[in-house]
Image: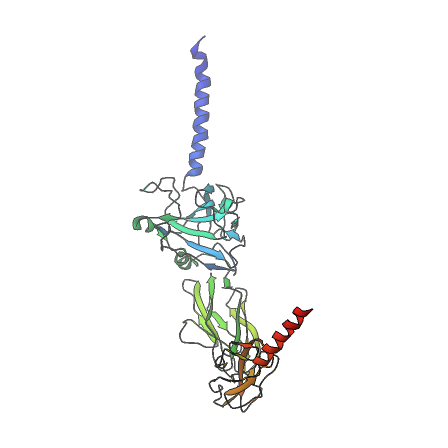
Length: 431
């Protein structure tokens, strides 16, 4: 056998192998041509989600820093669609311990520097590695199943942004470069706070993306609130990107809005964009001026984006109230036929008027309304009775308090009833 005959074939194989590996190397090159990321946005669209665990916080369960922001559906079960936060190319797509299914998308910025966005806890039907994506393009879906999301009992999106082009080189401590937690501040410093990064890069010059505006949650309920007083605090979040003008917010009658929880409440607000973006928390109070149902929408408007509404509702109730009186005070036991006196007391009504009282004796009867805070009762039948008291405004009788808490009274048979009982037993024994 002449070895010289195989040299041409061997050379051809070597060339083919080099071509294959060379092409693979070129495909993995971070500098390969793809569209520049001229603006960033959140990977979830519209309302229906909120910020859970924040970036950079120390997780006491893991004893590590969180390297992303967790975005949670309001019901913590919805499998919301996930979108590319900017133009880029998918460098990693698949299952990773702790994440479940996760994407790493590399983005080239206009200044020719790079960042990588990390989207974790997804379903398995995510876009494959090597896919070039546009900002706002569907890339996956949040997973509810623990088998897909890394073992969590609720659905959420891990959204991180790491500096630098994609690399398979591990961190100095041996951890995966795109993990969700790290124990050292030096590694944490390699990551950006996503909400700040999105805000700062939302409207890079040359970006032709359409303006977007979102408000979440989509509704707030305040329940019953006394007329001319204010409700407990509620809040929601407004976010916008690619804005060319201010966002105006207008609340309906009975509702007041502010950028601060403690002051500055008014019916209208104006949010000027910063670098084409807004991200603010809006605080809301319900202040009814009359006793009726209130409902409406807080309107959000800006040029080039669809109007957004947050539904609000509540009920104004009359401010004239009578507080419940104290639990009746008096004997807890007695005998049938005896007279027993019970006492109660209540503050004046909210209008400052005196109040009247009545007692529920626990046997289906009531005392008459009276300005006296005491009443006497005789029970003719032995038994256990739960008595309680109620008050009403002495001027406007329709304004009635809730019932007080109960006092239990045990009534024993009197001597005559005992003799009758013994005589009855005697007759029974003679039969």
